[in-house]
Length: 485
Image 1: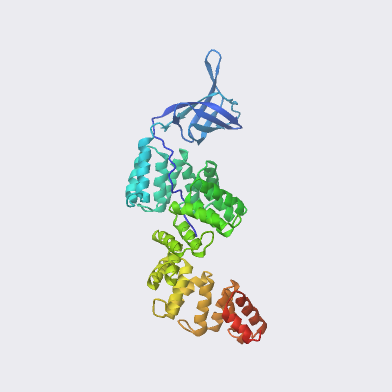
Image 2: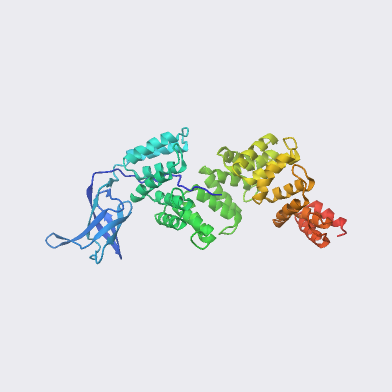
């Protein structure tokens, strides 16, 4: 599932503008063209500002070094500058640095602008107040007007997501670029998102990789997480699920909910690490506590199965409800399953139908398949084969094996759709290819009788009956007995 992956937690790095000033510092280390400078006076320049280096001779005479350096990285109290031009002088530790900064910022005057960011987040996230994106934008703009880099990043994100404003990707990019110039690592990750998704720019996964890598190098949790995604999925690098997991874990240990959820999933299914259901539950719980609706659904699933935690349907239902209330598609689907089957809660087929519809409307084909089943078998609604086929068809096309089998039955019987053994066989074959027990059983029947364009083939029928029986299907076991096996 494609997501727009943006940092959702505050990491406050706060600055307030001054007039153009000269900032002083001293060279702390030199590595090739890069000079690391410790700043003296609590002022921080921006990327691109010019740096002059000098040293003092006995008698207090100051000699400027030949060449020019440009600020390439901004940190708290330190910067890195890179030499420009040919044959610059070689600086040494202890040399003096002067930075001419048109928009220097003062880290001592941070409280008011930080307060604006906090207020904005309260309105954006609904912390102790109703969600109000327009009011969030108002507070972020106040911070932005004071040249707070988080203000630029936050405003850019509202424009990217279209929260309280019309989506405007070029504006998002403009604000992110300003935040990046001021050393904001979150904005680096979010610029990577723009290039990965082609939002307002030509899609360029190589540029996205570069932004994610630079953000990760600055220890930004979302940059680390997104870099992990590229390793996990083999985007711009050879697929390396182990490296992906390591990066997910680093981001999770920094408290990023989506990374905590991803670590939980990796432990649940054994992706990049051995299966460990207890650790899966532990990480899902952390992400759930941080409000992740997908983690709440996944943790509920563990409780419903008793995998890594004691089996507890009531606990599963409570977690599915939390997830569904936040419009998570899997939370809606899983809660629908519990209502349909009366597990952990009183059976309510109408509520199951409503939840499946919500999930299906968001494109979850599992839910579409279950909706088809409700109409196919008259669960909570009158039997309506045409309606069942309508829901089965997109789920079957998307590869859902149960929908493929059930739609095949409708075609075989000519209920809700025109009768066609050929289409029935095509669908049974697709379901059987995924080892769906009923799909294998129904394909065996068609081989046994030579229907739907298949030859009558006893051996093929036996093969599929046996494979279905191995999955525990009694119908297939009885068919084998009837054949004398």
